[in-house]
Image (cartoon, rainbow over all chains, first blue to last red; front, side, top):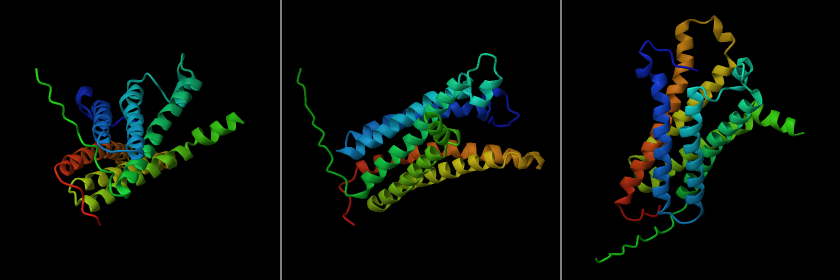
Length: 130
Length: 116
């Protein structure tokens, strides 16, 4: 569903949204990785798994949809070389990565916030003398 | 049988959408707990992001449900019905990421949270 604006295509919200989502996906993965390094145990792993799925979904799958490389199965029926089965398969990938990603991310965050957090892994500094 | 499984799970995508909404609810509740436990000022950003994502997803579901009955409405109503959920989805992701990062930056410089 493209946004309806009168701005030139490069400056429109329709063009800025995939770039924003790519940046958000990448930063979600990086931030979750840095945070989960300090936590211990399963909440961090589940959070990181969810963040990876979300990063994949927001940074890879949604821009492919926005660029027109992937299309919905209904649109694939009208294209000459579109295969609705392939389109449906990519829809499955998108649904799993975005919905499953938020489920795992939320479960990890919820679990980590439930109990007092496990003691943070002490950061070990090794000073290397030349 | 695989076709039936496919049809139930992905054609209407009900179960996966439910899982996604549940996950967003968990993000919101987890962020509420983090805000209470750490007395953090940035965790509420995560809560608003999760709420925005939930509302955006519900808005898109509503749009697909009411698509046919909306063809008689004015262009302004349809513009709002299409664009507002997308904006909510985009802003929601941004708020969750921003809230997560700022919360950790704020908490990192403090000691263990008070046991409540």
